[in-house]
Length: 219
Image (tube, rainbow, N blue to C red; front, side):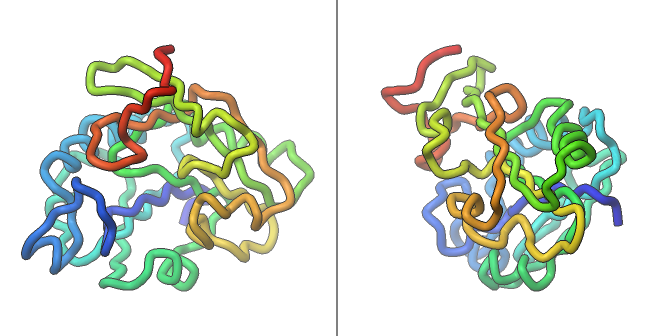
């Protein structure tokens, strides 16, 4: 097991996400639609292949219907499927997710810059605090590659977005899904709020968090 992990959920049980597959396959495994799979292949996977920090494993949280996801072009990436089998994501992770020094969240339809995983590891080697959170403020990106500031994620008084890394250098008591990402800052004494540029949230309009809003501004 490497000291850094990327944790991604590909299971959306009971949630109102239009990109989660409905019908028989949805009920059996909560797998992803072809649209979400394509975003995963086009955005998520290439950004992980391009990471400058190479010592990481990908823990992908699945229901049961995993084949379309495992059949994507992962190249040399080390993929570790974990099967939730209908259990609550946070409860499952608290019990079953391996603890690494750095745990970083990335959703199936989003991407990160090449220095994304390097930063929390660099910080872990320099920061005295044993446990802390790194929040990567995202830019929103549409299908044409245009970027937007999203005020919801650019106010440090707001709750963290899903683009977070949990660093634990000593005893590793928590997992990145210890609680909902909007409450993870309450689990640690120190949070580093990074400026935009490391993470990119895809605009596809299939759920509220991935839609354009009136206050969004072009970069």
